[in-house]
Image (cartoon, rainbow, N blue to C red; front, side):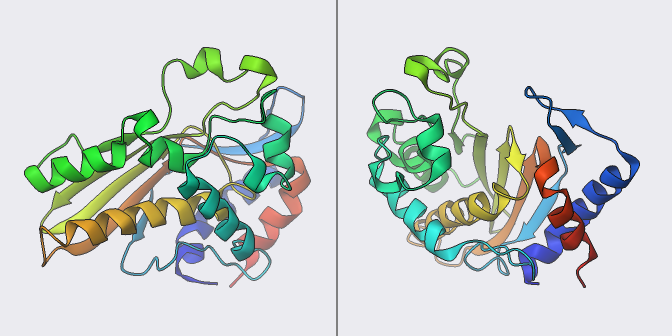
Length: 236
């Protein structure tokens, strides 16, 4: 079990207890889920390394994370680079495009070059509260199912601060599947943090890494993964 897994594990124990108590929520299909509302999970970014989450019984899938990261960095909404992944083919629209290419949302001119905007704000004013990368948008309420798509963006924002000469980050998600989502999403959030930190060193050469506060507003597991949640909760 690596550092990130140790930080996350208490939340799997809470979910395991909910399974035992049959404290279920039903999703739109009638499937049972267990859920924690908005846990505050804090990572020391000096220990987060690549962002991979490794329990003995479940690890971040390196090959897929690398492929997904390459696709994100391409900023292409078309899923041709990941069309071997069922989830993307299932939610894509009639043009094989999705809303949730995180690289597009973070880096592209088409989504207002938010990473560059945040970097500039931090370089111009180290005390700023405006260095926020907004992943989702109000129009998603109408766009998530356009052209037979089914992709309501899961991440809300990443918000950066420089405080006490350390780079801090708050990452908020609307929804996070603790089996499929967390193991893939956290490496991306760490990638963006590390990119911001590295670029800020040009301006602030003595800047230190701080923490990332991760708040998944719905941290949940589906019934088909209950046994795996319980295995994770019991690891030493």
